[in-house]
Amino acid sequence: MAERGRFITLEGGEGVGKSTNLARVVGWLEARGFEVVQTREPGGTPRAEDHPPPAARPR
Image 1 (cartoon, one colour):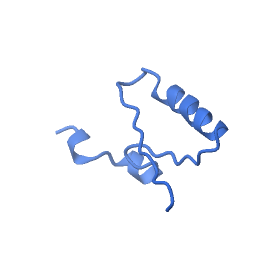
Image 2 (cartoon, rainbow, N blue to C red; image 1 turned 90 degrees about the vertical axis):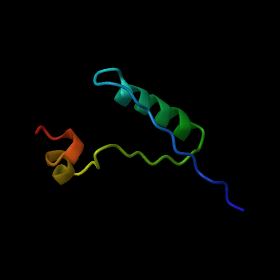
Image 3 (cartoon, rainbow, N blue to C red; image 1 turned 135 degrees about the vertical axis):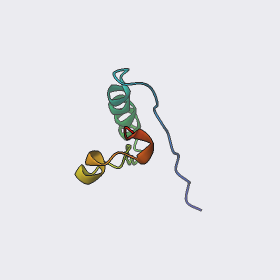
């Protein structure tokens, strides 16, 4: 049976180092032979970046 993956999240306010820490975690895991898939909010496409979710839009 194949081993199941893990879902790891890095949360925090703006400017606290999420991207920096993500790069470190990814490097650490890949150096040990793990396959890593990175995702981010709101979706990572230019269209998604231009259209924030309804809760984030000013009223």
